[in-house]
Image (cartoon, rainbow, N blue to C red; front, side):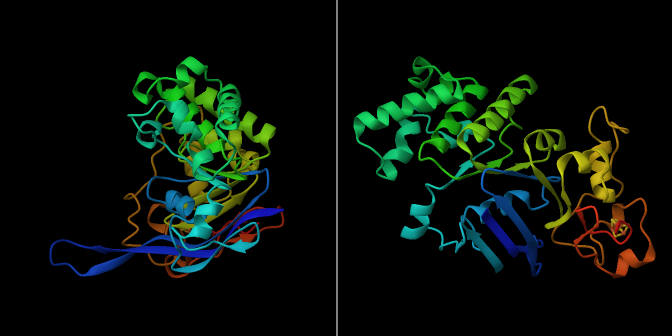
Length: 316
Ligand code: SF4
């Protein structure tokens, strides 16, 4: 069953070039369609500035699309801030990159884990205390750790506390935005394992956003690769990892340590969303570009093998 659906969603922001320059529209997300099924994880991967975090904010209703639709459990996403949206927030929670920034430094984490229960009027004081104890156990935090303030915990412990708070109201969807990128590699593995365990035990759907294809492969049932605000490849994580179809996906995979080109650097300038190249937006950096790529934007088409790819040369 489809839980979250983004259909041709676009979101832009006006940006002025220089003091007196004219305002241009930066298309952070440009016609993105994605679906997350109940209990499944969709990984969204791409470089910084590709639009993946904006996609996450649109999925949570924190941003309103300029065009296209976002639906949750079959109903249109209510306008942000309203009563209907606030009620829906119990069903959808964000797991952010920076747990210290997400937590209130002045309050013990146990109290912050209980906050969603208070906000959504779930249980009485005793039931909330029981629920917090259960949540602490499920994320591997001891009660004495939860009694501390955020700065007295390690980065991994803080992220566990943020996860417990996200799970408190029993959400159907977690939007995880670079949830492990601020952590040491050894702690990253622990949090990734915890996320996959929690997903299986709680049956939660996840939109998992990361620049790290290895982590995305580990947690996802399906992967969408984004470039300059658009999805350019979508499919099975193992298939994309072992046989990427789009030249950009190939570059991402090759650049993974242990990949075929561990220090591979994409040719050309980094993408500038305010100055989108004509035709295929990847063409200035593409090693196999042909004339057609400069004039014609490839559509995201589903191939016979089930993979969706936006490339003139990867129709399959
Ligand atoms: Fe490269 Fe052309 Fe494919 Fe774009 S459409 S990825 S430029 S081959």
